[in-house]
Image 1 (cartoon, one colour):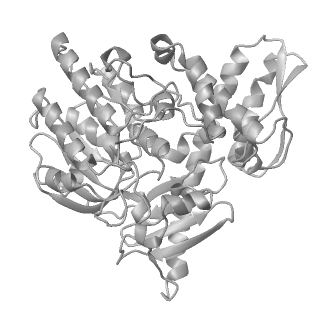
Image 2: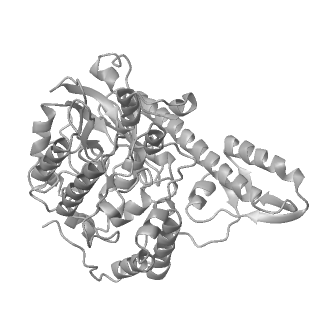
Image 3: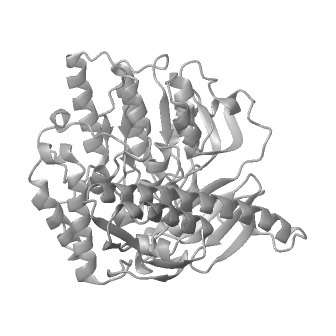
Amino acid sequence: MVDSVRRHHTNGDDRSRLDFMDEFAESAVEFKNCVTSAPSTLMSLSASLTGIPAYFLAQNYRDFQFNTDFFFTFNKLLKKNGYETDRAVIMHPEVRLKLKQFDPLPKKYWPKKYKHIDWFNNRMIFKTLKESLKQLAQEDIKNPSFWFVDYNCRKDKDISNIVSDTIKLFEDYGYQEDNTVFLLSSDHGYPNPNTDITPEYLASKKMTHDVFMTDDNIMIPFLLKYPNCTKGLKVDELISTLDLFPTLIELLGLEVKPEYQIKLHGRSLLGYVNNSNLSDQRFIRTDARWQGQPGRLTAIRSDKHKYVYDHDNQSGELFDISKNDNVSPEKIYEKEDYDKVKNVFHKEFVKTENQANKLQLDYLGQQVFNFISENPKQYKFDFRLEEWENNYIEKYLMHLNAHNDIFSKKKIILIQYGSDLDFVTRNSNKCFYQSGRYKDDERFTNKMFLRISEIFKAFKLSKSYWSEERSLIFTFPIYFIKGFLKIPFNQKTSS
């Protein structure tokens, strides 16, 4: 995975499609129209390795600690099928901590002096791979393995050669085209430099790239090479990154319980390769930010149209992308059937939004029952949420309250707070709560300590980090404090 690389070649910045991707495509199947589940690294990768849309998985970035007990993951499935999964080499220290859909490569295989606090540049990642493959070869492990390699295109003119050398390195250690599935892809794209949306512009406006729903940002390169694949095949049909999980299940012949198979939102891409999935038009959803965050956008894309919904303003626009130039889709205001087509896409948006709300409520319900089960039976739990507009939520909480008869009249009031508050207030007219709301603003004190508490929470769920490098409990908070104070933390550059 090469972070923020576009699916097409561009001039003017460092996010262009890699030259090596053209070479790799000659021996692989290229899916030319792949929509990422989110134009954000953590959201996109989380979705790909669960087969569930990114917007289902959390309420807010700061609260995101992926619950592997509630959500099924590709890693978990591979472990059950005898794979070695602790093979992820990730560049960003915070993503390493949060992205629990992957098992990090144990530190004993890293080059000496590398630390969990380090931001790995591309040469550090390649050196780590080279060192670990050498050591693992000496251990003569017989089980198959799942690797994730995380590169960065930013400020590295040699990135195409590094990716090429990485494939060759794996091949040198026995990962050949007759026994290995290779995916060469990106997590999301990046606005085309012709639009003047540059990193410098975004910094000056205090914006981030993830709030743009143009195709240059949400469409990604997606090249899959597997044993006996049709080399050089180009597939034009619209696909999603959610299709990766079911595709790998079929390619690897993994055993999956029916209840887990049903939860997957994607479909196997082998149907497109074999021309058996071409009868229906697909709607692919992609989301900028999670449900509880401000500035949230959603796009529903088909092969000809794209509907973009602004959650803050509760308004949507339809675009004609039949002649897309990868930069800015043309609005179809002049078409007579504008409202008719727009309504079709809005219905799809509402349907998928309700699915996300339901899953978040199921997740909340599980947390509530876990909390109740851990407390004395003499307490009664009272939900202080009134005048519900959403019938599903009302019935859900009534179901939870039905269990109150086992408790006495003593009460514990469950209060929604933090990022869940936005989710709750959207579905009720009145909500009693006790907490300061977290916002993406410039309030230094609150934001800094919220971020530090987030890191401590992550450590609690990342036992391997604690055992491998205990000094992190001190260095990570210092890392974030220095970040707020704009003090460099010995961050190594790609050069």
